[in-house]
Figure 1 (cartoon, rainbow, N blue to C red):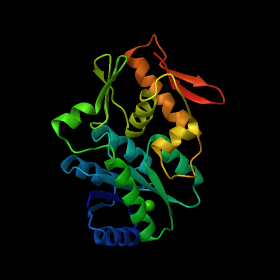
Figure 2 (figure 1 turned 60 degrees about the vertical axis):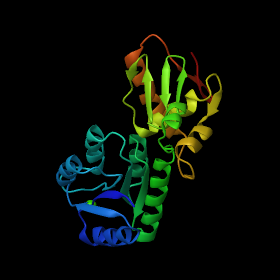
Figure 3 (figure 1 turned 90 degrees about the horizontal axis):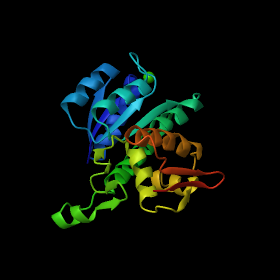
Figure 4 (figure 1 turned 30 degrees about the vertical axis):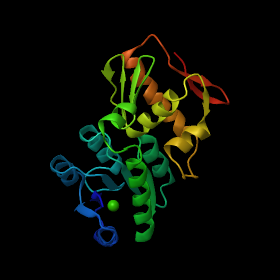
Length: 233
Ligand code: CA
């Protein structure tokens, strides 16, 4: 059971989704515009947001960016129109967790929601003091907090998206090893067979920029052409 923010201006689609997801035990708050969704997100903590790409007052992508400014780690699922192939990739490249193409069956959306929630909840073991401690690991100048999904670098907290965190975690767990784009895809987006490995490059780029903003001298993420990426100190 999760609190879900649904932003969709077509009433018939929204009603179907509210019905299907409520039946799964979720609590749905439905908004018809981006502005209403932004106010709702300030008042309530949501575990997931489902955003239509074509909203009346702003695009779903703009809403995504603005939501991420206030609740940086909220998982996001986009609803995209079938004739806009580019929207799927654009959404995922921005860091969305998944997308569903219209027209869809409510059952399909419910399954995607279950998968996203399962993935998001995975890295959180029970919070006893000892397990919280064992989930924190020092790797060179990095402090990796797996349970908290946070990384500190040179004593500064990095403001990472969930996808950047998962990529950095994969690399930090095997310093000096080359991970292929496919391995990174499998770590970050398991079971998604449709994604191109270019999406890995996009997020590595933003991750690199964030690391450089702390230490401009060193490039920790090395590119190995035709192979993948490694983390080097
Ligand atoms: Ca729409």
